Image (cartoon, rainbow, N blue to C red; front, side, top):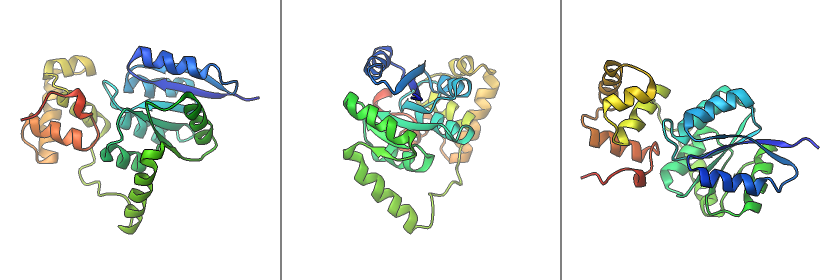
Length: 224
């Protein structure tokens, strides 16, 4: 029997260990790697070529949605199963647009997780019951409008990384250190983001990042 290879992308070690422990009891599923950042998830997908990536949304350095976009673009044979503690409409909409094969809430049972992995590996979709109806409704709306939403303000992968770190409250110096670029490069990205999005303060960028599902509102201090 060929086993389904799985990469777990989750920034909390205790949660990753829990998922690994649950999946180790499934004879047809093998966890081949673990990632604690979105960027690492993309890198390990390139190295390991797993059948399925179980991807948390709230990932550091590169959020799970952008990591999903990169994985689906560069490795179309790898399926992505989104995992989140929340079922916000912003996330549901993004999942519909990015090519992820499913959306599970973290409180799902081990049986449901294993079933979802098998389903998406076979090319099917799998969504938690509480978000399934909204995904279908959103898909119908997109079809009725003649396609996906406008992408005039589409950000590059690096712009999304910079935006996420800024929205998480990190100063330019720390952003530069985490991305391995110069302070001036980060400042240039920040100015370009503000110009591109017609947003001219950090609070506005943060609101945009939350609205687009780039960060979860729970990981950011209250915006006034």
